[in-house]
Image 1 (cartoon, rainbow, N blue to C red):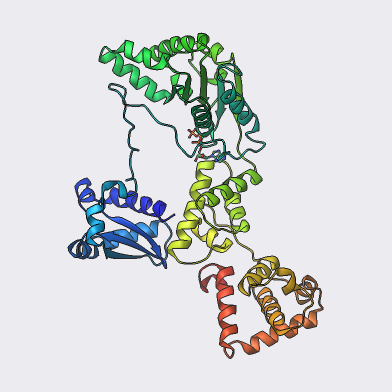
Image 2 (image 1 turned 45 degrees about the horizontal axis):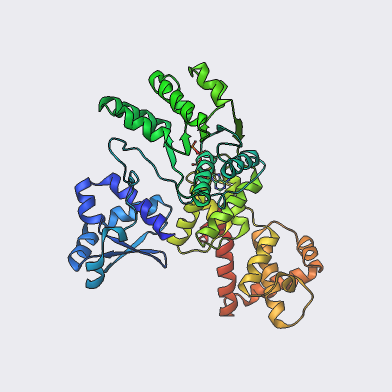
Length: 456
Ligand SMILES: Nc1ncnc2c1ncn2[C@@H]1O[C@H](COP(=O)(O)OP(=O)(O)OP(=O)(O)O)[C@@H](O)[C@H]1O
């Protein structure tokens, strides 16, 4: 997780200093993770340590602030000499900026590889995308036979590229040795331009016409490019006639792509056209959950739900929001809660008022005292149970607007029991240090970071 934070920090730094400075100082830094809210950076020697403290501390703190850290803290550690000697560039997190290019024969600089994350296993199926998913799976199982071409369209960030790559991965596993080419329409166009310029058209044609699976992203960008359309038309025909699979993605259906030649449009309609819509709430939560599990982040369901309510249309943004919340909580060293999530996202989205519910309080109190919720809410009369129950009643009274009888009902008691609990805890506050600490930490947790929120 701290790798994401570090990548964001580097992105920020890079925008604010020269390239030379960046490569001299920042490229060799090793991210040692976030410890107690402080970003720990490994540097090569004590000279570098001093230099960072003097020249870059503020910049790094600003970078953390931009990620939501309230009291940004950065510390430096000199790496042991051995580690330094072994400290090869590949140890460093991927630098921000364009992704490294995979080796490709000149003049085709634009060959892209499949993203390892974009597999069928990592794709959450919901009512918004189940047809596209089923079609992609069918194509992966019988390439060139099920639907050819498969045309997937939908708005930005909804999983079109993910599905295309999933077919690629599936085919690679099932049919090793098959040639798979993934290209954006822009890259296809650039390759064509380069091939024409360098007189390498035969190479270009061989490359695209000899594949078993051709994945072309953002085909809407063919609009208005006559020469590219012409070339793509021949590529398409060559592959189609040889029963090779073609999958195209676009932000709109073929009929809405302006200035697309009729013969291409009709070919795009030969196979199956399927769309992906914005995910509904449950699918968004499922996507967040899967993401969290993948990154081994233990984040409560209600926090995921809050994030899913904030970001409704674009899955890339949804994932970004989760990362923001995770970064925020780790940089400020506070546990996840709905209030923390709302705070982390308040710069990006309209702040949501987070109302504390009785059930939230019960859940947190039960977790704090390491006890099942039913027991806290139940009828037990031993002290181990009575204290947490009284604390829960006290905090509900303080943090929600429920009346005494309502709270009583929630616990299956009458209002006088609640009143007694509230005065009992009030009386003990300040005297019983353990209880005081428990109440304060629970309050903090439910209210977000600090007391000032109580007044808000
Ligand atoms: N159903 C899903 N389950 C899990 N992750 C998903 C799903 N749909 C999309 N994503 C994730 O959302 C992000 C954006 O998806 P992707 O890049 O495939 O979108 P796109 O539709 O191709 O967008 P663009 O039009 O910008 O190219 C990716 O990280 C992808 O893994």
